[in-house]
Length: 395
Image (cartoon, rainbow, N blue to C red; front, side, top):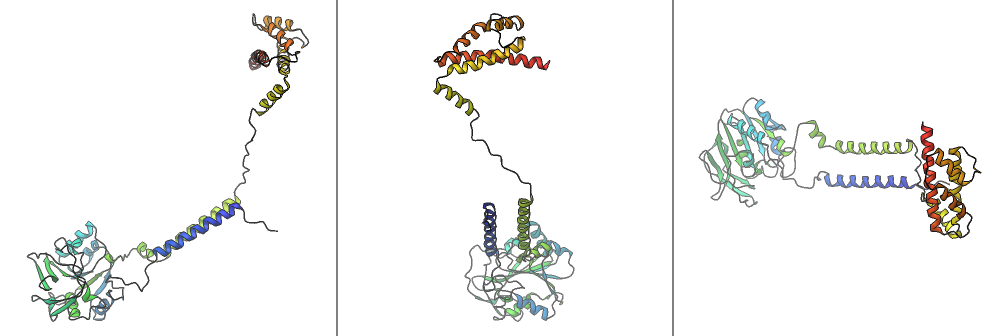
């Protein structure tokens, strides 16, 4: 009949189940949102209402030189020609190096179309008011003549920010009596155009009022009468052109993690089944002096203290006779005299001790305290003989 699951195997199954549960929970928490969740990012990849796929495909259909830009701003210096960089509500703040690269790009003749509230993070000359605007759609009218407003007298935006005080080089192209909706200014040889919101290029807002004309006017090169090379930024939307960033968007990273856990489980199982077998050392439950304690208890209950004296007495006589070269049948006085002569134990009291021990071993009710003292003295002499024997053997 097959045996049940062992305790060790049950632990492995339990740990494996816990790890599987943790992985399922993490995947559920970190899984990308489903399509039914509306994304507010005006990305050229998004076909949702707030996305910008329609505007990007329109430029492609009209044969504008447009491309998605997934490189950092530091790479703009390697690009040639009249370039328009579209920054449609970027969601990630630039680093200090990237901010300086953008400023140098504009000063050197680059053009930027920026939408949304984070322009202060990218261009320090922008003056965004601290108070947030009403998110309702607002209709803005043209405020002054410009190529940007050509044919577009009225636009509709869902503002994300409100412009503050204007600088001398800044102009409000669209606005109301309360706030500006589109601001333009020149910086060095380049120009920056800011929209309060991304409605004119969003899928759901490009057809409102004159929004389409504003969008096309904003991406047209009115100075050279030739279209810009339009770089639509996706870098600050989280898109990266590196291999690792591409892998991060796929399930490959989680697959590698799961494969690694599987390999560890296999190695652990193989090591457990194929490794050397060790028999655990079982420690003795007996007290090291239990035998001595038990033997002493027997003597105590039998009141045979004289027997303990007899054992030590016989042992000492045997060792002493061996040391001095005499038979074990010699009298105590003879052994004591030989010890004084050969061992130098003069006035040691050995003869008296042997006599006391000889008397004690024959008494049936010898006092335990006296017996203990006699045994200790006998063992003291026996220890001296053991030390002498070890020294002689070493020599």
